Image (cartoon, rainbow, N blue to C red; front, side, top):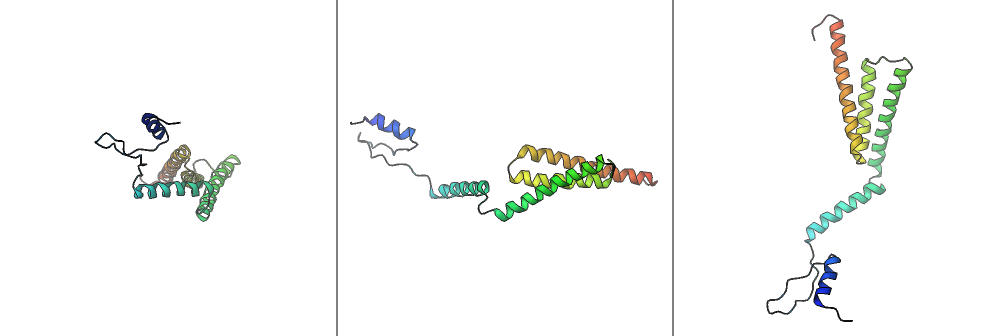
Length: 150
């Protein structure tokens, strides 16, 4: 079955193939697929390859393992702070409590950032800022309690 020129062009357009320009004498030039520059193809290949490696863990295993260890350490640090506070071993305004929270939030921020979980990154950055504020306020309160100036 013979196809009309407009049918061939529409098939190529829907298939994502760009055709070359028409000749000026009225004859249609042979359809040659348009190729993007080789540099763009290489960049696209690198991006896809890095995403595949990150998703599958292939090629990034040592770094992924390190990020996972840091993330689990951060989670354990926050759980330890909460547990010690709940059991009465730490006070809510102590420097140790705030330090455990800041270190835990930093670990979870690294892990969440590596895994592209940006809402969790935002939450942990805010958690870290609150902990740093609590540490600064706690040190100021200790200075005032000792009779110093803030």
